[in-house]
Length: 381
Image (cartoon, rainbow, N blue to C red; front, side, top):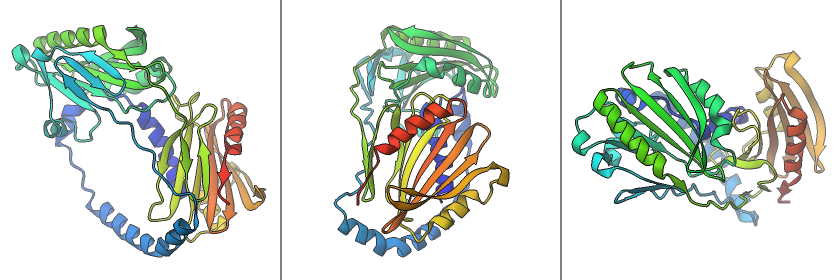
């Protein structure tokens, strides 16, 4: 169970940074995936686990002064007032006489995975310009504490998988850190695109993707691009440190570590929070996670699960230890680019774990910073 979560945290880090390639919005609208079997299995498993853990979770909640309160997602506050479009901390002027914003139903037909926050298509004199022309805006509203230029090289390499002739540069847009990447869709060589990632001073991102496939559409694209780049601005985005709290422990953001993902007590009885390191977020390789598992498990079971597919020569440590006076076990696993490290420890009614996935490139520094974060952990005993 924990092994899957550790890998999911890496995936979530990547999602925070993703820049979508050209033409993917339109091409995927006819794609369907049959998830009936997996969904059924998940429901059966969930119901069984819920029944097994119901009493345990009730007792813990009743006996604890600390209850889990989920952190709210940022409200994007999307609005289009005359020609001013606002989303999260960003605002820009749009040529509204030449474009229109898709409503939610129209947007879902074009973008079934809900990748983009808002999508605009040609209208007015450009209404019949180009069936592939669109302007798409993506913004999570989360502050990641790094800047667009930090992500340029990695995003450019990723874009080459979906685009030919992908090229770009780091730029400044109205005083904001940004990059521009242009290219041609590999799926449809008539579709030309330009992607912008623009960041606020405090590291909130907006991604803007513009594409077109004929002369009229490209003319529209240039008008839209000129309007956006000539007017985009970012409000001040003051940041308040976040704290994760559950019946077993509390931990706050500290140093270079920021909360990336969290899980409420699910039907398996698991509390989980992961912290990414802003200095390595672009590579997505380093994070520190804390959890408490109230399901029927033991340290021995947890260690067996995480090591079952690991070659013996890659198990660098597997030894008994203590953590804050509690019986514990330390495990270290070698990976191609990182080290996995686990400290499983016993509390009165659960097995808790501290997990780190740290890059080998600057391991000593990251390990020291991770240890400092761990020192901030408060056990609710």
